[in-house]
Amino acid sequence: MELLFDDRADAGRRLAEALRRMSLPDPVVLALPRGGVPVAAEVARALAAPLDLILVRKIGAPGWPELAIAAVADGPEPAVEFDPRTLAVSGCSASYVWQQVPEHLKEIERRRALYMRGRPPLALAGKTALLVDDGIATGTTMRAAIRSVRYRLPARIVIAVPVAPAEEIARLRHEVDDVVCLSQPEAFGAVGEHYRHFGQTSDDEVVACMEQST
Image: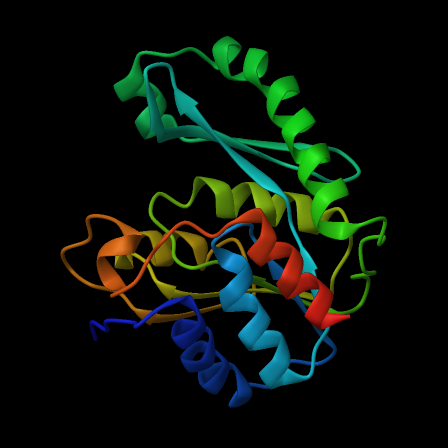
């Protein structure tokens, strides 16, 4: 089924309806900033669950920053995930990606200080880690987030997104315990095409969502 969402808050409320019908013991909602945060905030509110962040940075091709050739996520051991398909298209090497990692980790630390205001990451051991974003395109950033979360030993990992390509959802199902995706359109161009309003989420919006969740 193909859906059109009004905005990220609308997508979050609809996603929460689907998640409420599931058995999710001790859920912790983990948002992928920035666009995933307004979606996750609605989910956390509906489930009466705590909200935290998984800080992930897309690594783009030189001269083509929107083409994600890899992604890095924070954690006890930073997780770097390569996308072999886009890496081949870009002509980049793995060594180029590793050269970019320190710069992206520095930006992750900047965002952590800004968004979390000294608040430590929530414990995930034995809980359900619910990874939420506003959508999935190539899946590279989500895979990096999954790897990062695994280090924290949750009992279950569940992906919850409003929209994604069906083939990508099929691949991700092999990497987690469950996937909830409301819309899997046959023709998928970009996540924003499935929202009426899809402006960039600002740092201030992220901070406000996190403050409201405490």
